Image 1 (tube, one colour):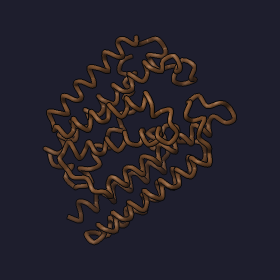
Image 2 (cartoon, helix red, strand yellow):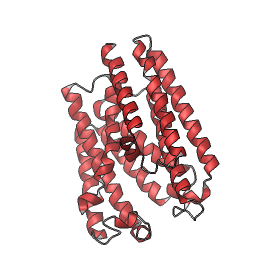
Image 3 (cartoon, helix red, strand yellow):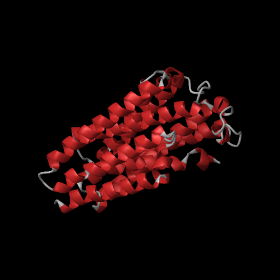
Length: 282
């Protein structure tokens, strides 16, 4: 039950620690690969610790939710005391491992815990700030990859990552609000959003991500045309995801990306072109 409460299905988000080393073209080096693996493990531990704390905090509310009521703490299968103890242990082990790898990684890990803690206490109730806080959690995973491997992150990398994260989180809120129909949203902050405002945020973040990615791709295009070509599957991916959002999907982005064949195919094509640009262009 403890493992299920740690939500291993969510660990795929932590693959973002691979982004910076991959973009730098050094992910295949054994020493770098080991540091990336350590960063992945660190964020799996830290993320699971936050999931456990949130489940304890929200277990009464979750019992009234159609799907969340099956979570171990809400269902009474895992005691809050055990969940809190496990969360503390995971946070301690995660930060210790991070410090062993690099102090910078431990700093990012600690910042992530502070962010998720403050989100649970405050930001989740503030319109827009709740989206930015969750998006920042994704960005921190990408930053952790750079911290673990001592790679400097470019402003293009941070812009694309930030805008892409906002796009996904705003899409999640849009899907939640659309799925609710005419009923009263269970999430307090969701009641203060409108379909129109979320559509605007989705469009703005997608546009900003595309412009930032194009800026990076055409800057690097002098090295190899594949950088510029990688913009095509990137834009098609955003367009397909937006189309699925319009159909009511997007409440679980990680599941949607793996379930939709076209999204998955575009992800594979983009990855192949992106990596080819980095490694063939060398």
